[in-house]
Length: 248
Ligand code: ATP
Image 1 (cartoon, rainbow, N blue to C red):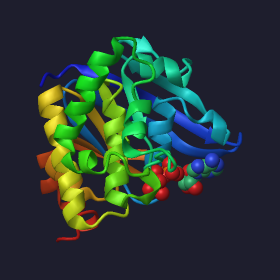
Image 2 (cartoon, rainbow, N blue to C red):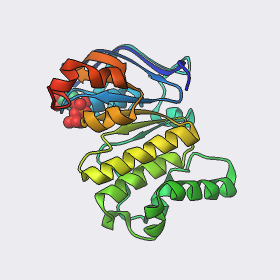
Image 3 (tube, rainbow, N blue to C red):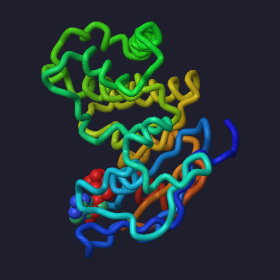
């Protein structure tokens, strides 16, 4: 891990429908090779921040009206979403978003659509995904719509991996999953980070689990970053303990 920032979000403001100010000047960095958690309650603006980065706000009538988003030194907020995917940044949406009628394996293969390095490399990566998610190998011929919530979350992360990303923006991986499965997903995120060098920005309401796996964290409240630090600094912070970890 280095201290180099791969992604810089500088003082970003987002407005929906020309009037609703949702992000009020958000700044954060994602370090190369790190796991950065973006924490906060329901409606704090986590999803909006991720969508601002991957330029997915337009379809929701949202707009970045101030600030800059810089990936590897390049201002990326005016690129279209696919251009960012080509640069190695991929978003895994909240709520999984698998293609319900495709099989698990077909879903994984859709992640490789931008690649030009040939079938052999893609097949090798499919095996790589199956080593992280053995369960998906067992389920590879099942229609995604008939697999469990946890399996669909794994499929969504696996599909992202198939694009050979440098950075994954992961929205609410714990949502709707039983605690044991949440732990399993985070363990896999950690090993993907360590073994493949993929950097993560993950939005989470589950502060407790996120701060056990992340290196850095930011806390978002009502469209503003109210606290930031290393994961251990945040875990030890009295306010975080009281308001986010439920201990005091
Ligand atoms: P959640 O965990 O519920 O996804 P979040 O922290 O990700 O919460 P956002 O989804 O970013 O929060 O929402 C932040 C605020 O922006 C909320 O008040 C929400 O109602 C508002 N908002 C989100 N999308 C839109 C939209 N398309 N138009 C108007 N307001 C929106």
